[in-house]
Amino acid sequence: MAYTTQADIEALLESQADLVELTDYQGLGTVNQTILDKAIAIADAMIDSKITVTGTPDLIEWISSSLAIAFLYERHGNLAKHVSDMRDMALKWLDDLASGAATTTGVAKMSRAARSTVDDQIAEFTMTKYDSGGNEENEAERFDDSAGSMDTW
Image 1: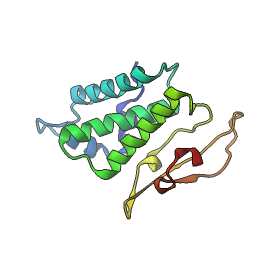
Image 2: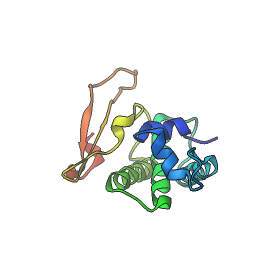
Image 3: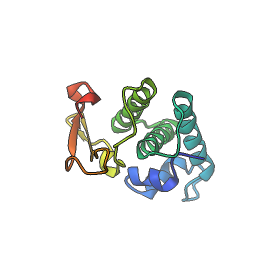
């Protein structure tokens, strides 16, 4: 079972047209499902090589989507800084999950707001945190990579 879907990936991209551009090497104007499935399979294999996943927690879905998007951009020959930052953040989360420094418990689904935006080369990410009872702890927090640690969330 894949940890992400085409719809999840499209939600992190600007539009379906971006996914078409990243996969349509034949000029058909549609998403090349074979290329997309390969990107997802590679992302999921990276996850499976580090951790054992039960179900599909939202964080794992985001990690898989982010890694698949980065693979597609790399394959396309255009790995922009915001995509590289997103990939690096996903790999950091994956390493933290593997080492036990992080858990998927209480992490909300990261939406399109999780896409990095470049503002003077500082990537910004937002997410909503929930306590163990499912109650929202705060509206949103800002992650500024200049702080040097994801532990500040």
